[in-house]
Length: 83
Image (cartoon, rainbow, N blue to C red):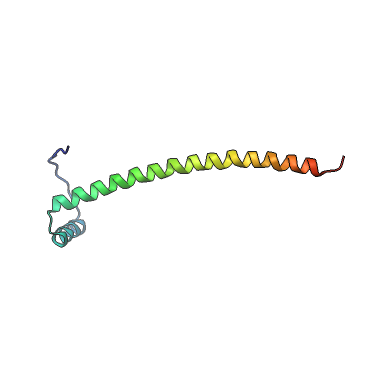
């Protein structure tokens, strides 16, 4: 489902030229170029948030596994030392 929203944006001359050039290159309207740019922006933001969450989970798993490895190494060292 899509919703059409009428909104006025003010772009700098340089940005407007880029939008016009892209619209001409892709044979679409300026509104379509802006719509696609906004869509890509928000999709990228979602991907960044997803990757950041994954990074936090991975760091936590590495920390947990590191503690387990440390414990195992200490046990091996303790068993290897003469009494």
